[in-house]
Image (cartoon, rainbow, N blue to C red):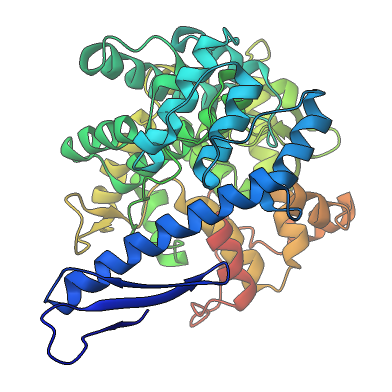
Length: 458
């Protein structure tokens, strides 16, 4: 860029060259900034004039001629490029040929403007669209990378129902999925944040909505996932602790008069099952002759084979003799868990109080206290003890059932039934609910690297 002020002259001049022709023009401005702006506009104008002239004279194969050749090959038609002056007008012409509609791309200032324009084009072409009320049923039908359990689908369905209810209230005019844009997504997630949901719940809802729009996108004409740019909330994680032998003894004393709860906790401790899986465990899944529990986990829908040895096997045989016609090991707990999945956890909180174990602690930045000891801690206890006795992590993963199918497949193909039996044999017989009080040696509270990795995966 070159502007200069000749001697004895109040205004700046511009001096530039376009297409081999030099232009020296009086800008008419005494201020340099205005003179440079004038030169930029004039230079652009001369460039466009030169480009149009080259296109009309066909002096050489220009960019516009290349576009013309490509369009002729694609459409079999010769197009008039006389009105094309720049890249934007060329794109407008391409869109007009492809859609039969005249577009004004210069009116689009932001990405959202272009997306809305594309939506209008699609609607005018009468392409298929996905009604919001049909999106969830389609999502359930389409294939996904990971199979979802019935319990997980039920929870996800409630998330989607809440989102639809919000749309009906805040955006009553929306009928199709492609009408939901990023601004709508941000408004909805902002409404959830205003309800002061926990970070885990907020992020879980956001991930579900992202997944729904990703899976159904090609069927709904979605050009960009509206929830893709919404940020996840940062979670200050607090991992659960495993119970020490002293704490297990205190818990056992607290449930000494509650046979069902004592047996239930014994199963949690000796199998590493999650609360829901243990509460709904059926006798048909317990092969006492083989000494094994064969359970398809609710969370991941994965089949695990857990050895049943020692005191637990004896306890299960006694339970079976007491009620040979029962379907569930704990019919009352199964019914209670079906009504309220947190009911057993609330009962256990009272047991922790009686055992004088502090189950929660205050975490900075959280409104509620974080749980460090609860029923899930028995699963951590199982993993921790296996880690302290140097059971291979692949074997432990095969018993617990890893949530990632690819990782689990790598681990499980190395773990045989004999490996799993050997792992469970390392658990002290008197850990919980037994008579042998030789629990873990004192001082073995230091976590191994394998155990730490395993608990993080939980």
